[in-house]
Image 1 (tube, one colour):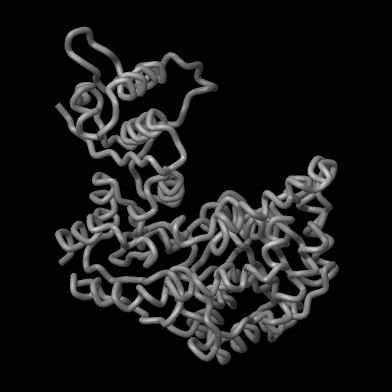
Image 2 (tube, one colour):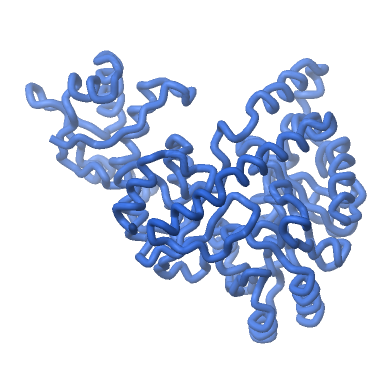
Length: 473
């Protein structure tokens, strides 16, 4: 009899039945529960998870109805053979087989599995208790009291004007001049990148990214038929000699870069490197897309030197992206593009043709939080919390045999050297209910790596430390 590890939370917002169903289904999909394996008895499962037997009965019944389990009279519940059931589906409607290959899709899919945040040191967001749900809830309540007709129509093409006016002030603090008509609201930075890539590239064109870099880009750009090439990232920015060499060879259309609090290293761009990157873009005629989604977690140049290329260029060759999913709530899909007036019109038209408008309700919530002064205090608290754990976590990781490549004084990520294949390490961790982020996913090459990204805000579970000590220490 197989006794899998489950994580049931009474504070997650989902019913206990739904959590059990999702947990079992996910483990079957990921081949962690094999066909024919016997599930724990109803009594055993209820005792181990401290839930009622009625809850387990309902969960098992739902899993039977979904085709994940089968009930054998007098013997119990067993994992059902899924392939035979899917073979009866018409060919045009068949579901693609689940694979255990570690790739970008695997990591993103597992980030949406709703594991407890403290069991996801590989995640790219802050745990719920680090954020301020009441701040967002207050914004939603205030919006709900408006004239209801304001909530029923489409938003405007470029986005909620008062928010764009507020962003003009925010960008001015960063020494970036952008009028409201130069700002286009998007559904997060993800949509912003997609719009820009579609505007500037055709199948076969080349896009440069940092290496390592935010993994989601690789898959989305590949779907467009573009070639993605990585530029080695150093402690103060990209390897500019390599950038110039590859630019002369491949003639890229875009270079996507995190200037400030780079994901996954938390390094920031020096003034010299910012100037050299801009010079290379002018010489080889490519656009720079500056993804500054971690902007508000940066403590300022007095703590960590950081230069935004958009501040040097003033949105001529640089397209600046920002958003609030990391600092406010992942569910608030509010991002923006700041660019030249002419390009802003084209990108707004492209947005309209693909998704009409963005959701004004979310934009109104963000506007309220920003305009009433609550946001600044909120991000100050986040920075203080990150500063309070960074050094201790760094020292403890090094005690366990891991090396932190760049000991930066800011940001939520550590880029670590583990000395082992982190793909295999991630597979072992997932079997025990922990989500890691292996280094292979952060490179366009996707080759096996001994690197791993650690989210320092998600390292409070003792089990995570026990796992790392056992496997690496």
